Length: 93
Image (cartoon, rainbow, N blue to C red; front, side, top):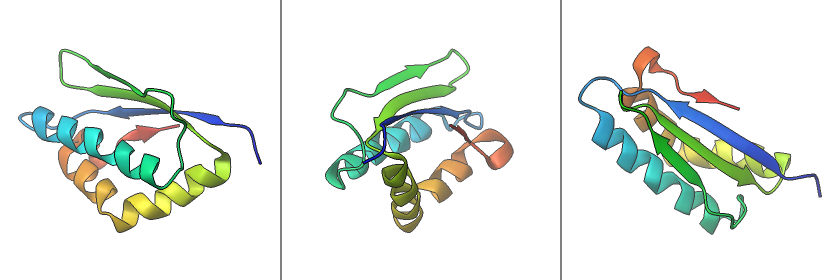
């Protein structure tokens, strides 16, 4: 098993989409937890004055991260995020 990997995501919402984006971001981590892809450690969500959301959590492995990208695509998460974010693209590490 590979080493755990910290994930940092930055989401910048379109004006007026701040609350919708926050709800989408809150909902996707429970899916990843049910699939046993992220650590049980409490994720961190921070929100800037402009509505930008910073999310930090820990993958169980690089393979888990890769698997999660397939799951989030099939659940429509990325499409929902793209609809809410400026530049139509969130930033992930």
